[in-house]
Length: 440
Ligand code: CMX
Image 1 (tube, rainbow, N blue to C red):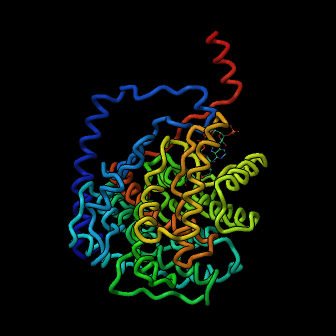
Image 2 (image 1 turned 90 degrees about the horizontal axis):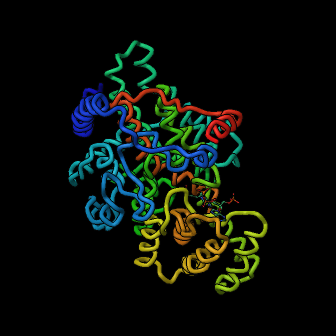
Image 3 (image 1 turned 90 degrees about the vertical axis):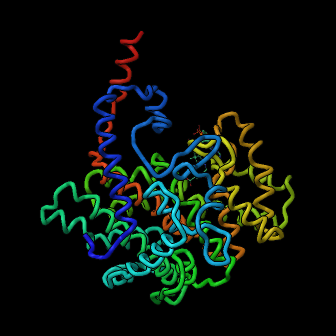
C-alpha cells in the first residue's frame, strides 16, 4: 500500500501468509479436535480459562507469567536492543518481535523508531475535538475520545468503502496500526498537557526513540525516567488475548471496525478499576493510608490494620490478585528490580515492598482469593511518583499507550489470518435449569 520500502511489513506479510496456509490445512484435518470442556461455573464465572480465541503475540502461564513469543521479561531485557548507553529494552523491538516472531537487530529497531517518528503527526481536528472537553475530564475518557476521533483518518475504512478485496485487509490494518502507535504518545502527551500543564501541543525530538520521546513530551528528561518509560512501555504491552482490553479490541475488530475504534474500545475496557485503572487506585489507596496513619514510614502492623479496614469495608486491595496468575506477577518483579537498581532508598518504594510482605498472607487467610500476589499495578505508581509524575489519574493512559503494541500487532495478525466475526453463544438461566434437570 505505501510506496516506501517497509522491511517490517514485508516480513510480517511473508510470515502471516505462510501461517494462514498452514492453519487452513490444520483446521481441515483437525477441526473436530476437542481443546477443552466448559463447566457451568465458568459460564457464570466470567468465562475463566475457556479457550476461545487465537492470539499470536504472547502467552500467559499461571505460574511463569507472560511470555512474548516465548521470551520472558528477563529474557527480553537481555535480548532486545536498548538505547545507546541504556539497559532497558526498547518497546520498538518488542513490537517487531510480536509482529514477526523474530528478535530484531539494532538496525531494525532503529528503523521502527524512525518510522514511528515519521508517522506521528495527529490531524488538527483531533486536538480541536479534545479542546471542547472540560479540562478535568478523566484522562482515559479523553484518550478514548481522541483515538476514536482519529478513526476518521482510517486507511482501512477508506479502502473498504472503495471496495477493497479481503486479501488486502491485513495491509490496510498494518498501515492504520503503525500510524496509530506512532500517534499515541503525541495524543497522550497532549492530554497530560491539557489536564496538568499549559495545554500546548508537545513537540517530539527527532533524535529519540518512541518511549523517550513520549517521556520528553510529558515534560520529563531525567535519563533514568526515560529508561523507566522504555521498561514500562515494554512490560505492559501484552498479556495474551483473553484479558479484558485485548479481548474487547479483538471482538470489535472482528466486525471489521478499524483499529482506531477497536483500540478505543480496548481503552474503555482498560479504564475499569478491576483492570488498568488499578494502577491509579493503588497509589490513591497508598496515599490515603499514609495520610490516615500520619506517617511516611508505616510499620507492617499499621499496614495490616489498614488492609483489614479496607477489606472490612467491602473493597478490594488494588494491585493484588489476578484472574489467571497464581504467582507474583513478573511485571511486578521487573519493576521491583528497576527500583532495586536505581532507587532502593525511596520511602514510597519501601512502603510498596512492605505492603508486599503484608497483603498476600492476609488475602490468603480469606480463603476465597485465588491469587493473593501482587500484579503489575502494585508497583508502577511508586516509581512514577519518585521521578515527579504524581498525577495518578493519568497513570492508566501510560498503560494504554503500551497496550497498543500487543493489541495492534495481534489485530494485524487477526486480519492477516482472515479470522472471522467473533460470536460465542450465550444461554439463559432457564436453559441452564433445563440442562440440570435433564442431567439428573
Ligand atoms: N482484594 C480483596 N478481595 C479480592 C482481591 C483483592 N485484591 N482479589 C480477589 N478478591 C476476591 C474477589 O473479589 C472475590 O470475592 P467475592 O467472591 O466476594 O466476589 C474472590 O476474592 C475470588 O476472586 P478471584 O477468583 O480470586 O479473582 P477474580 O479472577 O474474580 O478477579 C481481579 C481478579 C484482578 C479482578 C481481582 O483479584 C481484584 O479485584 N484485584 C484488585 C484489582 C486489581 O488489582 N486489578 C488489576 C488486575 C491486573 C490488570 O488487569 O491490570
